Image (cartoon, rainbow, N blue to C red; front, side, top):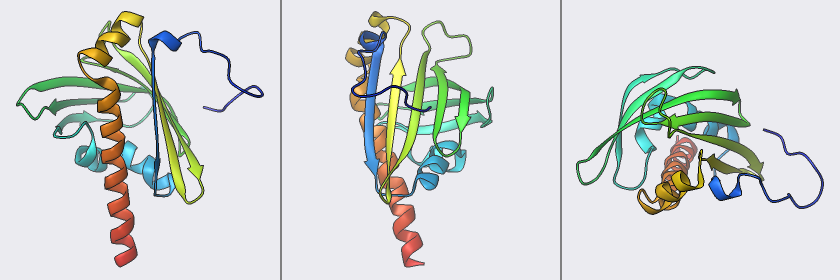
Length: 168
């Protein structure tokens, strides 16, 4: 989860298979990490605009799984499955995400939570097995916009928690 090297990063060997999304969230890193790692929070913000989430099972530890369904605004259900491959609180998470355990088209995501003054910068780097799978995710499933909307939902959710905490 740590950066290595000096100066500008070299072109990644997986650049043609990657999606990189980042956002600064006006909340402390520990709270942003907690909102991403506790099911009581995840079910309130996870997914693009208009989506809701139903969790079937959730175990947050390395090797644990999150089995859930995303319900699209058009009524379509999307079976989803995540297993956590690395957890370094509150710095980062690595995961494998597919439709089901053993999905040959699953992808890897690494999330880094970095302090940015009083705020938190979250960076989500997703790597697909092939360029074609990445392109399909972008073109057919609007993965970039969906990822940006998901982080926007996270930002709105934790900002509301901070605001309510300041009022209390």
